Each structure stands twice: as structure tokens, then as C-alpha cells.
Amino acid sequence: MAEKGKQEKLLTLPEVKKILESIDESSLDQFQRRTLNYLSKFSKIEPENAIKVVKKLVEEFEVTPEEAVQIVNCMPKTIEELRIFLAGGRKIIETERLEEMLRLLDENRKA
Image 1 (cartoon, rainbow, N blue to C red):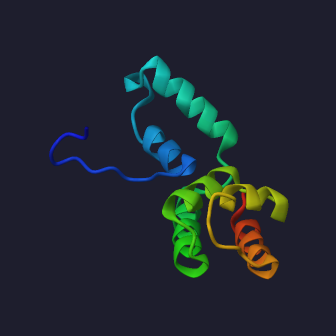
Image 2 (image 1 turned 60 degrees about the horizontal axis):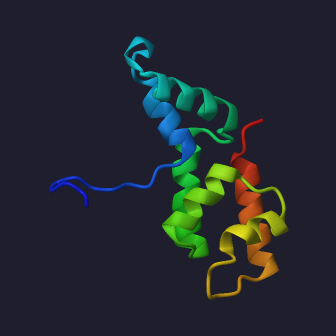
Image 3 (image 1 turned 60 degrees about the vertical axis):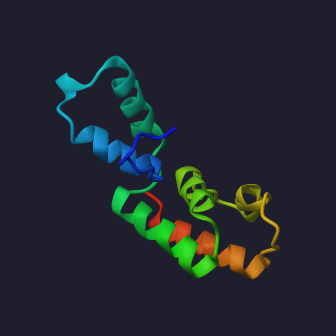
């Protein structure tokens, strides 16, 4: 159970990377350094853009916050890849909407 007064917040990989980078490297333990190394390799979007894209996915495309974070973490490139993240939902999303989502991801993808 969560401790009293603490809140859970969903974070994307780029957001976690930014947090770890803000800590003096000599203060990081082995696990944190390995995590930072992983995040440096696999973050596919800038932290500021990640926040913006998650918000748009939730508000404009009506995906859950959890789905939006996972989409941003993986940054799918095809409709088939994108559908994997939305397969658990009960609603069917039209191909046109999925293409719009991919355009949003492509606009914010790291070069």
C-alpha cells in the first residue's frame, strides 16, 4: 500500500531520464546509473514533447493515461504497432484516427 501523503504519477521514459540527469552523477547508485544508461539508449522523444504528446493522446484521442505513456515510451511507427497498445480497449479506433496519432508521434520523434 502507498504511504499516506504520497501520490503515484505516470512518467514516460524521457521524463525519468530528465530526473536522473538532474541528479549529480556521483550521487547515483548502480541501479540508477544502469537505468540512466538504458534511458539514454531508448528514449525516443524529448521530455517536454513527451508530456505534450501524452496530454494530446489522452485529450484528443481518448486513450487512457496508461496507454498514452506506453505509446510514448515505445513510439510505434506503424498502425499495426500502434494497435498493440490499444488492443486491450473495448472500443475500436478507426484507421484514420490511428494515422492521425502516428502523425503526432512522427512530428515529435527524435531525429
